[in-house]
Length: 347
Ligand code: ADP
Ligand code: MG
Image (tube, rainbow, N blue to C red):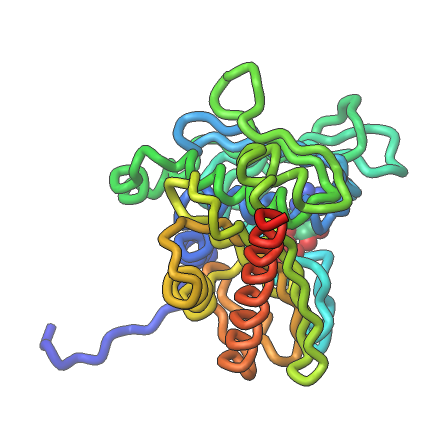
């Protein structure tokens, strides 16, 4: 065959396509936990228990949400099957985390997936097992409570490069994900268990404020050091609620910058830098490691929701102005508490 002969184009098998997509969505066990937690929240669960073993290669998540209809179990783990999106225009007003129906299909492609689920109106629970996105047999019937239990076993069993290159600190990444979601979704009770340990590593109770979850996860000294920040900016059309640690608090080894924009956990290098470096270090001139949790809500039209599943870093309309405004308010808030302290000291 000559070098210059045109190659044949063929259509890839679904399993190849799914496995490629899976590599993008599920890069490590914590991505998997994130997708499953989001599904449980979307299903209106009030309790979410995550159990992990084997450095995150085994993950089980138990929720008390709506459950899944028996007749949907057949296509549940196929690609682009979803109960959330109906037509393209819906994307503009999605209030759920999921919408593209790719997570379970991806997970099923690279693990052994078992789903046990019961809806409110069905008499029984059903248990379905999938390999490569396909049901391996007719779901079995059993007794059970309303909600869904998803069990993932042998994650990456058919992606040997992954398991070979994976570091052994996956649990700390899972801890990170669960703690962020537990703080932001403080009305939901979260549990996280490692291996077969008796006690949960994370256990939160439903609460009206994020402070209790922060207290239970990060401890009293962190929770007691926090000051509330609140902004309602009509001009720039955003509002912000959150907590920042006082300038005399310095008990953390690692800074925490937990940011949700429109209830999605994202990263923003510019905002983090503005607060950690500009406000604490430069303006207030303290060398402390802060704890910051912010929930920012912007006009949905000024941020793209159709982001790739792992695209954490987001860009906003008027980002520079919004960052500047948050920076100023955090600065003022921290200054005020310093003043109060001085005032008390002078009395
Ligand atoms: P998406 O979340 O984008 O719709 P997924 O692959 O994550 O896609 O899930 C597919 C569908 O499975 C969801 O639309 C939902 O109907 C159902 N589902 C998944 N997890 C749960 C759960 N924990 N409780 C109830 N339904 C679920
Ligand atoms: Mg989902």
